[in-house]
Length: 419
Image 1 (cartoon, helix red, strand yellow):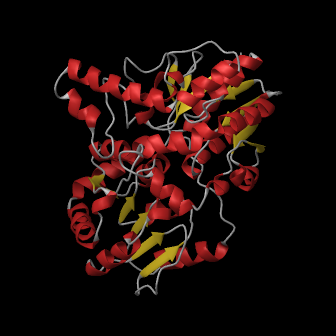
Image 2 (cartoon, one colour; image 1 turned 135 degrees about the vertical axis):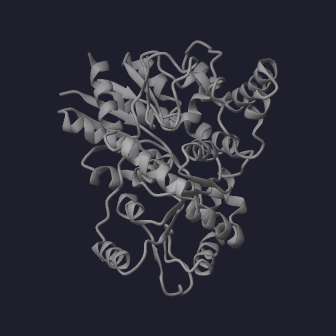
């Protein structure tokens, strides 16, 4: 039996895929240890996996609503993520990962676990990199849609020279944001590198696990060598609250399929008036609705509308008339498997790119979160409901994904790498 260290950092959307892979490894007779923020210890152990703390502790960074507001800025979100959270905690993360990796046989990185390659080098351990969404590859042949000013896709329209200039400027800016990492490497006595961690530096020469569905992106010539497109690694969480699941079941059975609104585990902290707009748009459409709010501080809801703090998406989405969501890669993967049409309301990071790729499958429409007021939600929902092509495409996609097992494929690739 081998021990695999899977390191991750971020929201529940960054945790759940590694829980899925860890459980698949366990089912194949191997031991999986998840290195993550101490905030997730209970969730990891509830999944039956070994936990290793890796700082920073998210709850210690400040109020989550304030963190989310800063990080979800459409233009400066990535810079703030690196400057405010990742870089100041390099030493802590390195120390924690070094301890967690001591008795591991193989390491697996997440795009934000910047010190894992250092640990692998220092301990002479094999390692694989992983990505959760197509955007992480930053492919020149399939440039991602970027929130705010979509400079890469715009530059591509003007030809290769303009695109390479824009790409080079972006790469140079990000390298400056990563300056503390290069300083730390020098402190450790490691040789300098020209690689940019957010770009090519995150990828292992031994291989990369692409943990998203092949329908969203085809392999490109500039993807890292030895990349395996595994498919989405899905873990839906657990809920011990039978009261909520029973209430959902009764509500579903009591009438026509509802509109289902979800914002993942991060965007809920900056939802603002989104839920009120969702309620009013549903009321104007004379539609029942389910809101998955993360925290329920809503006023009294009208008849036919229910709010839940948390429910596994796999229990809710298949019963929806339309799934309205923010296009986090895990949420999108669950929505694609539900077979239901979608209205996608992306905010930042990989969400606009995920939304564009989902829309290209024909399963629904895209409405940027910043424009999601009552009137726009009502209009876009009417269009999704009125166009049978969206429902047909959604059903076809769900059938194509029915046999997909991204966690199992990733576990098999990890086991092969052990050899």
